[in-house]
Length: 311
Image 1: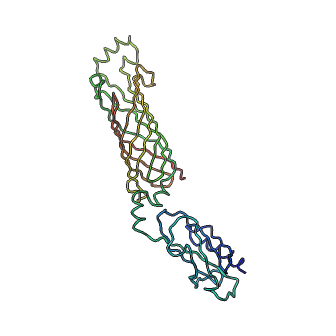
Image 2: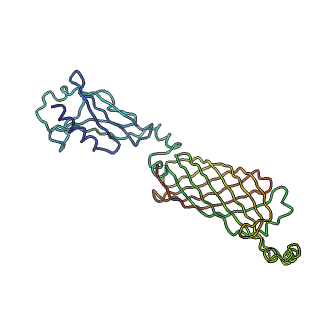
Image 3: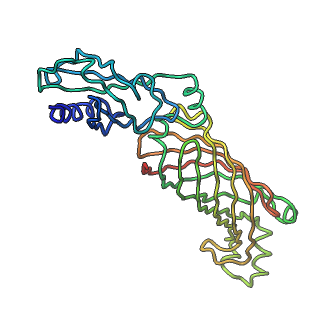
């Protein structure tokens, strides 16, 4: 009779809550039943109040609370596989029904340690919304300012921003975020009439330069790592981070036919906020400041949209 009774019990228990799965049993010597179950989708520091109940009418009601049990009942730290030993005959000396069902109930008990820990590593809601891969693209607004050797040779007022695009992939494992990114920026050089006349002379009437059609291009690859501050809100995540970028500056026409190139390496700091309006859609707004470039540094603000795949 034990076998039939507890096959029914295991099926019923696994349906009681999404956090309790894989309910199994086996009969052990001493008129004992070993019940095992798994707590999943739980924080490492979460504490559950776990109780066992029995039904004699096939699961319509559960009037019997199982008390003659030892092991993972009462206060249980999740997640993982848990087990308990039940002295069946101490709670039910006479078994007169085959419509016997057991129910495993677990309720999360908030703890000060758990709440404090979630402030730094995130909670289940934040991780469920954010963890995974995000493929994104966006637009930036950059302010270029001179530094070092080229300062006397380039008037920043002649640089007119035209394009500032970025695309990449973001790997999120709350509270950490990693970005791999490619960027392209372009500025037009707005020359005055005197400069155009000099270009006509120097370029032997090359149409590109005679019209002042020169552009400054910046192609870059960047990697950054950020930490999520207070990752308990789920819908928006403030982040602080830093990274490094390799880039190449090119002076040429609009199609990147170059007249001069200059490579560089920068370190940068950034601050951003990620919004999670939908599980598959992410919006990121941030600001980045570059340092240590021998020729140019840059401040920029950006906005990107991403398609998210949860992992």
